[in-house]
Length: 253
Image (cartoon, rainbow, N blue to C red; front, side, top):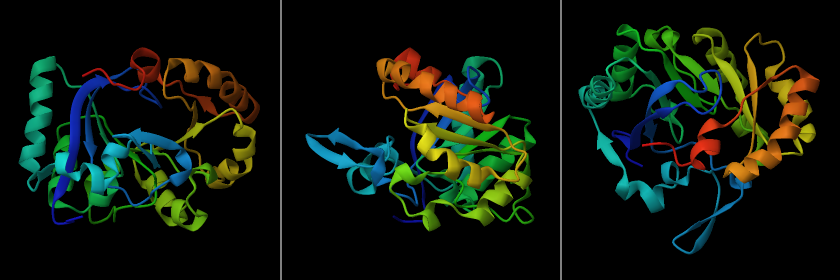
């Protein structure tokens, strides 16, 4: 990928379906590219071909989808997208920067320019991240005004632990971000993940959310009780996936 450019996969206005701001009207900007593959997340059919990996392959698979991504080089272009949604809504929604892995662009002038503008304008900003990349908070100070939803990948991702769990990045995001929180997506066998979750979050006061895996409302309903019981047993916060229940993962556009 040409790292001199920034790629936006899509933007849309919907409600946040998971985590701390579930149910909150939000502007989503989904950026293209990721530093992880996560082959353990199952297979998906794309143009008749079975492909392993992330459930947002359209934001990760450079080979198949990059041609549909939009390239930006200036923060003003991204700011204009947000301004248009604000004008149409008539109020200032929550803003979510997601991916892929948006933090691969953390030092890109267009990305950081957008973040800086959002923070200065008083937006509530969440960056959804796998927590393997942290910015230099002293150099890029605006990130101190951002909430990081730290979706640290577990063994079920199929990634080796040294690549998916970067303790220095987790520590920086957890301590230097604004009320950052952990977010884990679990299947009914979640008890098998208990030890690794406990190891990842040990010593952090940040909130811990666990969500059920599910591509549609039926799968979500089947998986949710086990994850809720897991949260009750371990003292974690249960998060539903409201966008899945409402629209079967197809966020309202």
